[in-house]
Image (cartoon, rainbow, N blue to C red; front, top):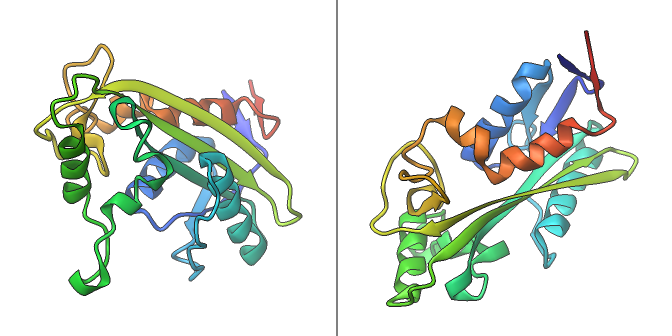
Length: 207
């Protein structure tokens, strides 16, 4: 059994899907979580050019503002046939203009991915995740994970979020939105990054 030296963590995200997945991953280790949104913390602008950079930016902002350790996730979909796009801009591809009420529309974002691929036979893609654990003193640690797959069309499933309905992992016959949360946790990019987090000095092997 593994135990944690961390007792309470701010999840530096306003994304309900990410919050749910990270809370599910942390709960077995007795770590209490609270979201940046619950604390009324604003989302900082993601001005970095890498997943790790944006994860660090978000985690540090929440840790310093709350006085608690903070864990952030910056993740996205990189499609080979689109030269790695949408990449770090995955959420922005889903952003609706203010004239349409703002917010995010991933049905629209998935349509753009498939439309831009067109007849391109190279539909290989991967989800990439960078987790950052930050402390109020400015210390940060990065843990990264990926899962390889391909883009399918039309979208299938309603269990996931974001681009899950068009992503099918290598070796699978179902999309990330069709498999159970437990099966997704066992193989996702976030799960791989989290496994590295569990091997850090913040977790110890118990009896």
